[in-house]
Image (tube, rainbow, N blue to C red; front, side, top):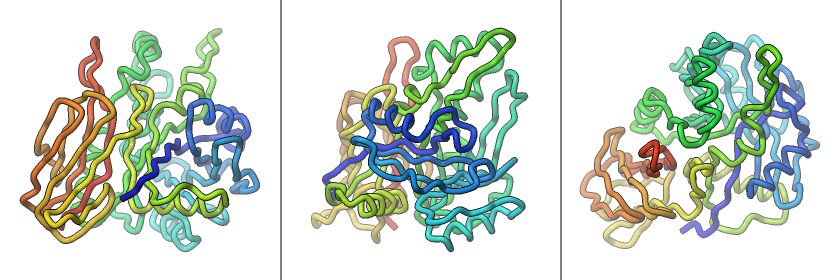
Length: 350
């Protein structure tokens, strides 16, 4: 089993592209949010270089440098690169291939983004070519994208500023359906991210930061599972984190609603063999065991379709058929009902 859980925030922008904070300032905000690591994914077309010299430990936080490759469409999150990939003018499949050739991991970013109707005229950066192959996974939940999509008027802006965490929608049904279809064919790791820029909103004389780094670094996080405690050697720790991302040994959580540390989703076969999320084996009968940090609504999804719903902190499900099983967890808010909280990677029983 995997005994160590580490929490990180992915898809953060710095001053090297279109963010507003330095790497050092982002690290301070990440430590304040209680994170173990943060991944900077600056736009390669603006940052130019990886700026790998900034990788390292900043207090209790590990900072890693990656890229977000793409201009108008087909944004691709690259992790673990040793050198930059210049995607300017390249078709999306070639970007994917180059990231892989350079030893990096790659995830489709906000593939079905809608954009903000108010002021930005719903400008979005989507994936129009979904025939691509070879990517390691998909970012299924992006806080900034999902928040902006609902801001249609100044009234909506005020409402969603007042209740940023409580009214956030979960991953879109289009995104989940696309991911579920892919998982029926092969293992596809899902991640989530904040897409933090710390941008200043300007409207007439009004100037303010609607989504600060301090806020966003405590929203959509990934919780990774490792066999061993992260090594004091930075490169070894980085490799362990990247391995968990590649294998999907993680869940995505909106920690701004409630801290999600302690969530578990395991399969135990009849003969005692066990799997954690992201893992795969030939079908065996057994039990799925789910544990949540607090009382919630637990939804088991099988092959992309709802299979069972429970209320409480724990659930056990007898597995009698092969399938791709994942979990969604919702928290009840006294004003706004059941809010999306946790989305696991699947357990694959083929």
